[in-house]
Figure 1 (cartoon, rainbow, N blue to C red):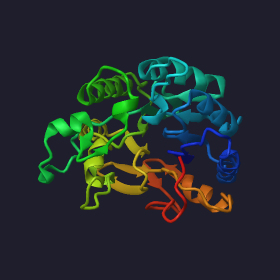
Figure 2 (figure 1 turned 90 degrees about the vertical axis):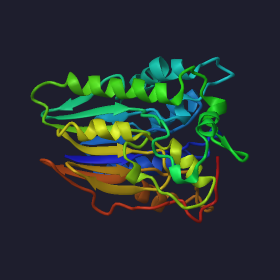
Figure 3 (figure 1 turned 180 degrees about the horizontal axis):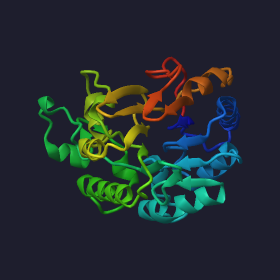
Figure 4 (figure 1 turned 60 degrees about the vertical axis):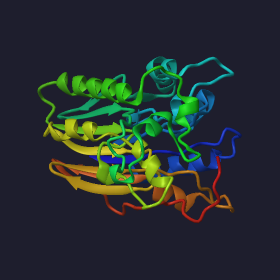
Length: 299
């Protein structure tokens, strides 16, 4: 099986990323995958999410999506809450545009299943040697540096409660897979393994790293030997690791855009090609690191 995967496109709401989306779609078509995966963070605007999925949809292959944290930022102008967006609206938007929202419905192909979740963070990625009080992770502020989910996620769950809920749902989704499923691809936005996170020995970067994911999610994956591949986003630095019986990758694009609006190289670097042969996973020409380094930063 050949998979094309990308995350964290962060589409600008003014329409200026249309050419980028078209270039990403062309790159996916060039790879000619059996499955197309997007691991979250297209837009905090539901309208932009819908329009972007419509542009990215390829009609002859399964197109799979998991929401990212930006996708569920509440919308004042529409009255849409984070919980409503995640539990209802994003699945409806995916369905309207030919995508499957994996947290709502796993995708099965023979003995292979794709299972998905937004994932979440519970501060298990934090650097304890920094001795930052736990209250600062909870308030998402350290010496003036702010993790902006604190202003934009309006559900009442704590981070630990949200992580526990999503992990319990993941365990349930794995438990109800048919007996014929012997291989699983896990797609999430947040990271399941600390080793995928990049620490830079500087603040606030390493403070923000606490919000990248949860080690408890990774434990669930390692406890299920059917899981052979994890695809995630969220961290804007691309990475690949081997962990016991599985391969884990992050496939973000990020906020950078070339000044000349030639998106060919950016799209080629951003869309990862993944080959699955039995239980063997290969990632030919996988680009690691920050592919937006040196490019103008846009939001």
